[in-house]
Image (cartoon, rainbow, N blue to C red):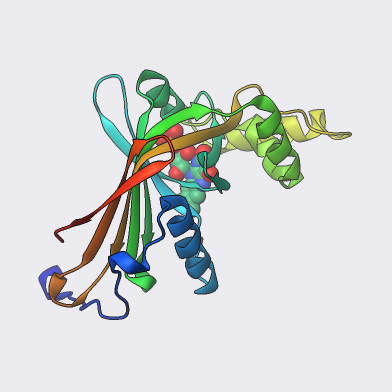
Length: 212
Ligand SMILES: Cc1cc2nc3c(=O)[nH]c(=O)nc-3n(C[C@H](O)[C@H](O)[C@H](O)COP(=O)(O)O)c2cc1C
């Protein structure tokens, strides 16, 4: 295997200042619509990077489940490793990798828990088995065998056989309030287009072109 020989020229699109929306939220909305229209696999999958109390970075994929001018919402376990890291350091980064469009979007911001009401509204929209899964998994904890998890799932399935399944107290959403966005479009000869939006005052964004 020779990875050095793997090489691709990015030539399908360009990005210039006049193409950009003045609001990064509108720009994100436009690119997300294009990613969905291009039928990318899981266009709302994003990498969430955190830094824990010891200064150790970690990154994992989560699904973007809501997006507006307030920020980016994802759902998870509030006792997971990522929740521990966010409690110690709410500064996070998000990353969307849309390679078939030769695009990436990188966001920095601050994560905070959303309200239980907002989490409940989404929890109730999930398939019943996913709701039970949230009750069964102590996310990020060590287990000896898969059967421990399957047993817990069966136990919860029996416990919640009837009626509405309540929202687990250790499960819910986070909203990432963005501080910066970077929109990246691949170009020929590695002369890519990069634009960074930085929040200057509430509601106002400064746009800068970056060297590739
Ligand atoms: C495509 C994809 C989507 C995922 N979506 C979520 C999600 O929305 N929420 C979540 O908690 N974990 C999600 N996961 C699992 C996480 O990547 C991760 O393994 C888990 O949240 C535990 O992370 P932690 O131990 O760092 O807290 C997803 C994984 C993949 C590959």
